Length: 268
Image (tube, rainbow, N blue to C red; front, side):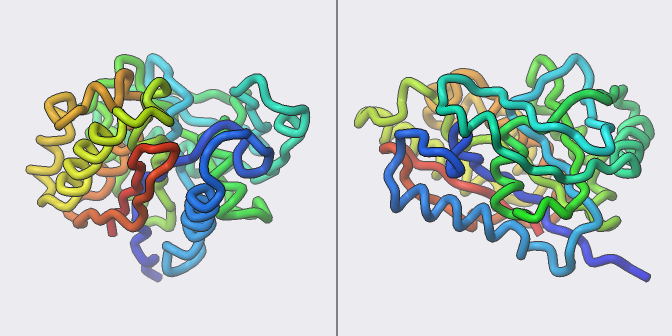
């Protein structure tokens, strides 16, 4: 019995424990629209996914590494928030099958990998997933970025994992299309964010070879290094774009948060 191909998506995950704790920043209307977009993730696959693989901006390892715990804990990788921020729960099961399958596909592509049996879900995973799957019923595995943050390497990781989309796995890249902490709320950052976001929207819609070539050279994009002085929040897009194969990309969500443009991308 064939399984419908799942989409692959790149999302902005917001900040810290938002929206489950008042974090004291951002416009209420914009944050409400972002939360609604993330809740809508569950409706993107045409049938409920067998499992979800999330690549978060908040985990880097020497090798691409997967969580393997049957019940991963939450990793509260933020600080300075009210006590409620450290009492959140999202008890989704892990998926030893997906962790093993991910490593097998990487190995078949000549990409060494590792596993982390004690690692929990960081907020780049549990915040959007708690919105999309509040019942925590979907088996979930987190995949790290590879240290060095080479875009071509992450595109290759995504290409290796593309078969997962035909096996009922929903691939999600969790980051932020704008991530310069000094720019949020500053009027002069708006033009840079708009220029980069326009380039990003144009890029994801290109045919695969041209799309990948531009993503590899993202630093040459308008205001690229101003928008991403460090690229860890952009690299999940590379994995997703690699997994997209020939599927065209689109931008289902775009908004202005704290004065700067943020957006998501969907393939398939």
